[in-house]
Image (cartoon, rainbow, N blue to C red):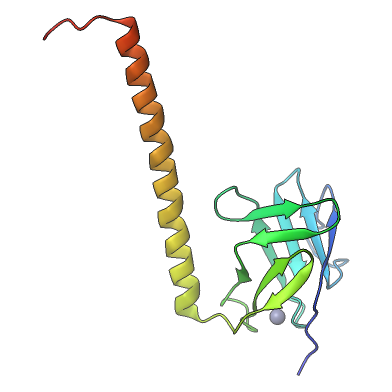
Length: 141
Ligand SMILES: [Zn+2]
């Protein structure tokens, strides 16, 4: 069995080399400019995973020293099916990601994103309506 890493080191970069050749296992490469996170799978298989930072689907917390990602990182498309959390640079391993779990997580995230987008739109529309009401007098009532 390959040795799993227990922690990561965040490294902020401007560009992430697209071939990934120089990417070191155990280092999480973060490009704020491109809102991208790339890391080699810390299970030891070394496959590259890439994530796009998103306030809803993939959040990053950085306290100046350590990073936390939310939600967990898992991809059943990787052969190793690794599934883990990164919390304050520590890797917390979960049981292997099953295909259905990935799909379920993706569906849940998509539904959540849709809900939040709708909520924002409804809120904006209501505010706009209120704004119109304040401007114009009701004509046909
Ligand atoms: Zn792996």
